[in-house]
Amino acid sequence: MRYAIVSDIHANWQAWTAVRDDFLKREVNAVVCLGDVIGYGPNPAQVLADLRQYCSNLVLGNHDSAVAGFLDLDIFNDTARKAAEWTMTQVDEAGKKLLRDWPLEIESDQVLFVHAETVAPDAYGYVEQPDDARVCFEAATQPLTFLGHTHRAGTFILNPNGEIVQDAATRLPVVNGLRYIINVGSVGDPRDGTEKASYAIFDDAAGQVELFQVSFDGAALLRDLQQHPELDRPWFLRKRGVGRIRLAYDHAVNVEKTAKMRPATVKRSNVKVVRYALSGSGIVPAAPPEPKTEPARSTSKTVLIIVLAMSLLSTLLTVGLLHWRKTHPKILPAPPPPIPRVVDERAAFTLTTKNVRLSGKTIKVEDKYGVPNIGYWSTSGDSASWTTTVTGAGDYDVELEYAVESKGGNRAIVLTGGDSRLDFTLKTTVRWDSYTKTNIGRIRLPAGPATITLKPGVNRSKSLMNLRLMSFTPSTNVTVNPR
Image 1 (cartoon, rainbow, N blue to C red):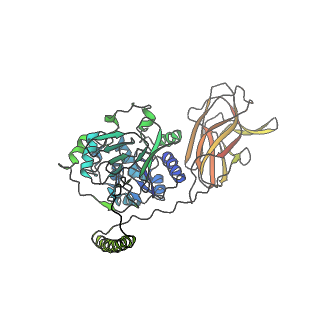
Image 2 (image 1 turned 45 degrees about the horizontal axis):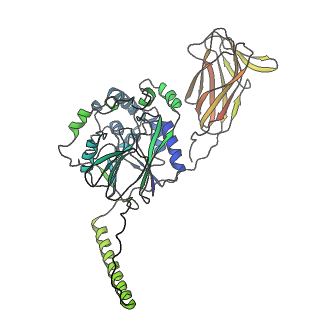
Image 3 (image 1 turned 180 degrees about the vertical axis):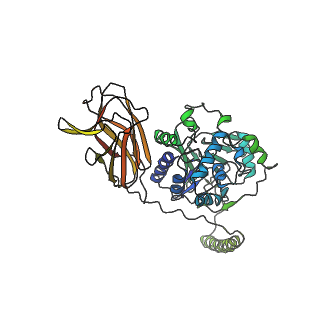
């Protein structure tokens, strides 16, 4: 099977949908989420609901644990604590109950999935250095461990001689005799000096792990964040460039307080664990030994010996399998849900002076050179609204055909539709009748009847504006509602 492994989505809708679309194209069979689905980002309920359509194998991250009521917010830094407090108001009781049902680990004999560390998964320590990795290797038995939490992808490999090396390769064969701790990075809050979402695909039949990075719309994320003053901008939008982020400043959990939560030894704490068997070991077998040369025997004797040996081996395997099943019951995970069919019902549409509703003292529809336009917009309270039917929910690129005279400077405008808002500044076109077309950005609209309103922004300039039309075109490479 091919497993998509994601971690640290952090309520970033734009990053999650970009990663989701990417792994769906790569034909994965199931999805495993290593926690921190929420926290920091502006769309926790939306991301949580959409993730559950694709993923039934989830472990509990520290931000999830805080919102579920399991983790004291005193161990969080100010940014993480404020985000958690705000997120608690956005996730309903059914969502919190869902979080409380998530385990801290998912494991088989060969593979372990955990959010942060194997020693005390409920303490959420950071595995960043070889010494951290060594403690985690000692606390687990599986050859292969997947985790997140640090928001940086990378791999620690334990050699048979006890040496631990770090590997930055994006494609890893999982070789018999070695042990691996693989950090899949962060979907929604990258801290590796890039602005790309990270995730992994584990092919257990091929014995290979591949790390991927996917671009997403950071500008749209920033617009969503600006609607919630309780939330700070994420690190990757503030600290750009490799090496710009210092570890001491991006830990959500206080390291000293985390250390006190760990047991005194490397013995694992008593945590809720889901155990299941993956299909195949996920380990590349060692090369078979060279066959030994034996003296030739008669053909009949050789055939008889082979038949007897195979019969005996078959009997032993059957008895052994029955005994193993009796003494080692296994709990299989819920089968992955069917991948929803994605139907794009969006269609382009245009708004003109037809059916417009005007509010304000000076705004009016006028006819210049045979082309109607909405003019003036020169007093407080001026606005134009349309009620239209949107064929399909999703993101739309908005283009205006307008003219703004140079007197008074550029003009700030606000466009609203559904629950979305788009702020933009229109540049002057020198004359009030010198029309131009410009794309002002992207807005998310619901399907069905929608009211769309355009009005001057807070810093309304005195320059007059004429508007001929406003076009809405379905955005490319943007997820629409799945079915």
